[in-house]
Amino acid sequence: MKREDLTEKLLDIKREKGWTWKHIQDEIGGISPILITAACMGQMKLPKAQAAKAAALFGLTQAEERMLNEAPYRGSIPSMPPTDPLIYRFYELVMVYGTTWKELIQEEFGDGIMSAIDFNMTMEREPNNKGDRVKMNLSGKFLPYKYYGNEEGVPEYGFKES
View 1 (tube, rainbow, N blue to C red):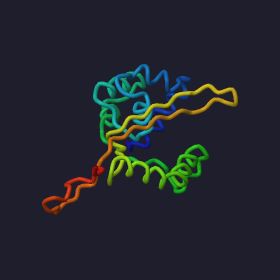
View 2 (cartoon, rainbow, N blue to C red):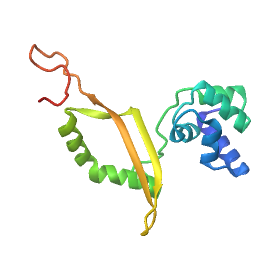
View 3 (cartoon, one colour):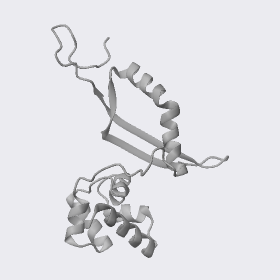
């Protein structure tokens, strides 16, 4: 079985049982609800305890449970630019604001990147009388570039210099 096959099996069971992602997240627990959904979608791994809970919930085999605990091959968007309208809007955000985010982050922190590995994310519904809003909070560790081969007096990392 390939990881994509397990993802389809989980989605089939979710549909058959009429479960919501919130139900699945509550049953598995122990880590971010977003990470649980990402793991079910094949983009993250579940820790062993959560993989066991997912296996019990979905009625999976031991091999399928172990697969949930393996580091996946990440990146599930089949084409670029994405064709799904919701996913495309995130792509559009990066196209429009990407250079702005880069400038503002590097002005504040220095020469580096925001980690998507040491990362937290939350999503919530924000009521609004003009139509509810999607509120997302992304928080990634700043990772400065290392200036290797640096001589004395030259900083080792690209943190913002005072």
